[in-house]
Image (cartoon, rainbow, N blue to C red; front, side, top):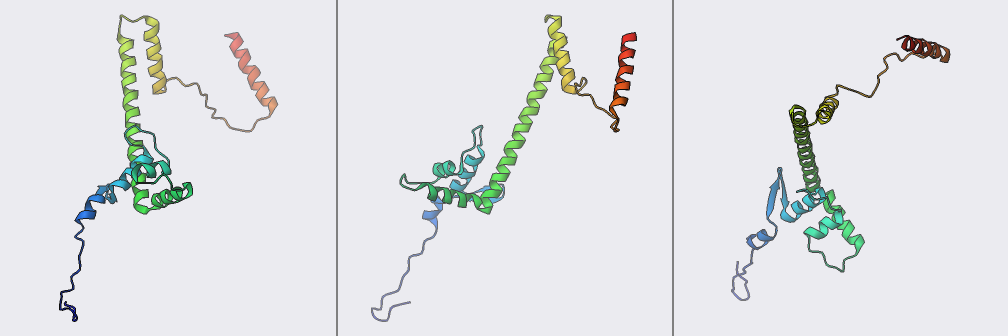
Length: 177
């Protein structure tokens, strides 16, 4: 471990990782280790916290130190390369699934609240009868009690003469009533 010429020890400075560890703190996001910048990139793409999702380039600019002089093509290539990373893709897909699940739960809870309010209106005697009836009508429509769609079970091929004959018979039956 000493140089033969100077009899001095040959020392090497090893990095213990403490200085770089602060810059690249790893965060575990749903089982995938990502740096804080990578996780921020994923969250910006998805648009967490009620925000609209960003483009890849905007998310990259937002999370990485990008100089103003960088060309658009280079920036698009770097952001696209980062997005193609397997861990980034998995994290973005998981965040999208979480966001979708949260939106569905919020929609369901909002729908339940509306139904409860409509039912409360229908029972309130201080509200006019027309409002009470309308609230019950809306609850019924929500439950599918009244459908505007007519389903036809008979899907046989019929000639126009057969259809005309059936229509005339139905019209005659309606007139007699």
